Amino acid sequence: MSLLNEGFSTYEEFELERKKTDKRLEFIDGIIYMSPSPNIKHQEISSYLHGQLYNYFKGSKCKVFAAPTDVVFNNESKDEKKRVIPDLFVACNPDNFTENEYIGAPDFIIEILSPSNKSYDMVTKLNLYMNFGVKEYWIVDPIDNRIMVYFLDEGMEIQFSLVNLGEVVTSKLFIGFRINTNDLF
Image (cartoon, helix red, strand yellow):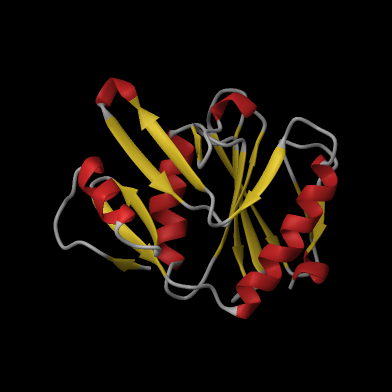
């Protein structure tokens, strides 16, 4: 993950920059981030999870999307927008889609770590997703072969569990969705 701008930008400046390039750009708290192309291991994991999620949600109102589909978080009371490109996300509110993006908090997001984006996904995006009400967030770590699961309980408190190689990760939100880490890593 690299910073595209040295200083702070407005969302409008970000949109102008985004229209000038086909690079994957994200905007959080006045900073423009540029995502590098993912490596093969990252793509293998993403493809596997996308297939599992697609099969699980087939025929339901929930839909799974893979990067580069944009998600816009909009806090109208503070007049601020943030735009990210999650590796995978599940959205169950079809009214939040425009032609090119999803506006609002998806129900479930998965990010797959790369050496260049580790702290970005584990700190910046974790805080963003939980603050905007993403109900479940998985951080898949192919370096240490583990999955960090963050979810909001009924009281909107953040809960955490760690799933290691050889274990099964189970969604807290979507009953019956489970991944054996031996199949994933």
